[in-house]
Image 1 (tube, helix red, strand yellow):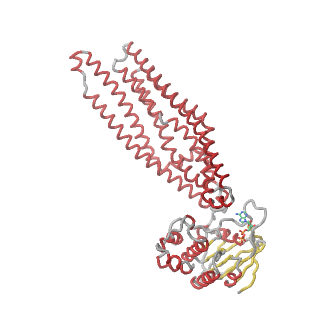
Image 2 (spheres, rainbow, N blue to C red):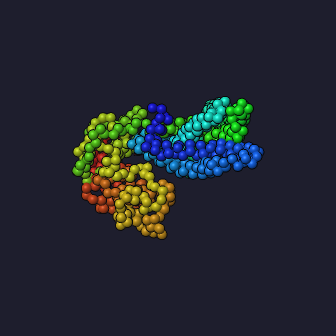
Image 3 (cartoon, rainbow, N blue to C red):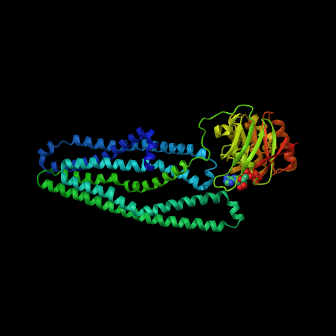
Length: 562
Ligand SMILES: Nc1ncnc2c1ncn2[C@@H]1O[C@H](COP(=O)(O)OP(=O)(O)OP(=O)(O)O)[C@@H](O)[C@H]1O
């Protein structure tokens, strides 16, 4: 299916509103045309009647055309106002629909597929590209469709009075609405593509700079990055200037052609008047109507230009959303049942594109309620167990069962309900401590939050802050120390109270006393049913667990019970 057909498919539920918006837009443009057309006739007819003496003046019916002029004037304002309301509402709904649709498709890809994308690039695609797709209706489809309908009406109405005038008008409208925007679009297509590409890269660079500002400074790379961004910016400005020149040229040419067409219509009408086929009052009417007809073409060149951008934006969003997730959804989803025991037998997992196995011939059994320390050298495969359980990556060999069900039959979000993780690279959300705890457990009471903070050994710090739970922690927990941030992540998982808790280096960055207090509190406070898996390089922490499993070369080896 083509890119545009897919956008139109997404618009289907909004077709009623969109059709109403188009009808109002056409009504407003027709009212504008009608107003000038009738005004032209009225002025000229009144002048002719005035010159024709008292009898002609008395016979002239001013009332009916004056009502018509008022009708078109009021209709123009009302239709334009309602059109704005309806079309903007439809556009916002379309943007919302495109975002919800893409998010639905991106979520199952996280994090395995998304990890291959640059985060700034992703953010830009998700915000700007979906925005641009939403503009397809308002700024591309609506002006082009409205102009096409109105032009047919204008030419037909003109043709009723003079066929040659209608032909001149039709030629002018086709040149201004089709040929000129087409030529301008073709000339600026390369520049637009370049601007789009440079903008993508610049946004990705900027996001990277903002996220890693400190690191760029430490590495002494800030100036190089700054110069690179400035170069791209200059390149974008130059291309924009070129595109603006082409666009400006097309607009000027359109104005000239509109004038020439109106003059041509007048000449044709004058010839018809000379032949006695038209009254004198019709001459200004047709000329003014001809000029008004070109008003509907004003947004058309920009619409053609935007069409190219929408195609590129939608192509990128669809390409991202169409990437198949690393782990396919189960054909017949199953639900793990208590006891939530885990068993791995002969498991082999190799990451996409990797040459070596992260886990191979791996066997492990963990009963619900066990406390297990996973120890082993860096790169041995400890965190891979978490990726496997959360269905971030699929295993190619062996079998994994959780709660009596094959892991391949369990949805990732079902596993997330049973297992809570404090990962090595955990993420805290911008806002307050309360917000971060509420995201982890939306139904948590304030009392439960304080209990969780107490288990995580963070309550004293939060109590000492004047705003308490409402203390702001900055983006990614920037205003907390490394140890405090990790303890807040621990409090989040404690608050959720899942059946399994996996803690990756939970005591990293803590002094010996806080480390001991945290482990004491965790082991005492968590219910007996809670399995604790503690990934650690710290022998003191490993010694607190009931069982130690050593991970080496992608295999699990029983290292003893403590
Ligand atoms: N997303 C990935 N893509 C490709 N290879 C990966 C990926 N994640 C991990 N690996 C590789 O898999 C192996 C196991 O990694 P894993 O993260 O499980 O080690 P770990 O034991 O948790 O190490 P550490 O103690 O340093 O956290 C390593 O060789 C690593 O390079």
